[in-house]
Length: 273
Image: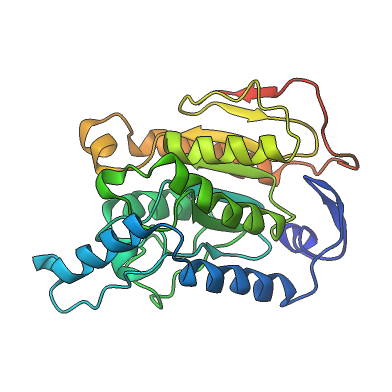
């Protein structure tokens, strides 16, 4: 049996206590239920109006596209050991295509990096049904609707957080979270704190990694691969590659027993890129 097969066969200890392997299909079905709830969500009228307005206006380069214009669910491998958390769908990206980090510059950078690290079967993310498959990884976001100027309101972020919590609960093998951008990072920090993690050592700095307790995933912070960051050189492809190389090293590392949920203690600093 190959090494990667051993990691998903049978029962094993997950990052949030002793967890049994999810029977085939069950995790996928439950994640599909979360996805349906996300798509049907109408909790944030401002965001729903904005997404609809963007779809009605469109963009010349996407003439002929029928925009998704609904909240966007996460996607990926239901046996994921890596969770990638972004900010929100891009107005003419996922709000158009209906899949996170698909059809825009941020998605181009992210999927290329994940492909180089072995988490994606191809280096492009163009549209749903394009053949992209994630391996040992799942992609989601702090907010599920495209916000005006990429700035969701605090109440909108709070309304979306339960969806992220449900996804993480249904991905018991997750050992590493890559948080893209300060908003994605803050969503992860608040979620883990609510679950009892000691998040005092979690600070947003590109490449900083911290395990907020033995029962919780290691969180790696990264600048978001937005055009603002990539066009100015604040984030380069080698910088993003190092983040996913670190994530790969951690998910490939030895699995340690995590039988009790973390309560107290300080976060453990893993290292910086």
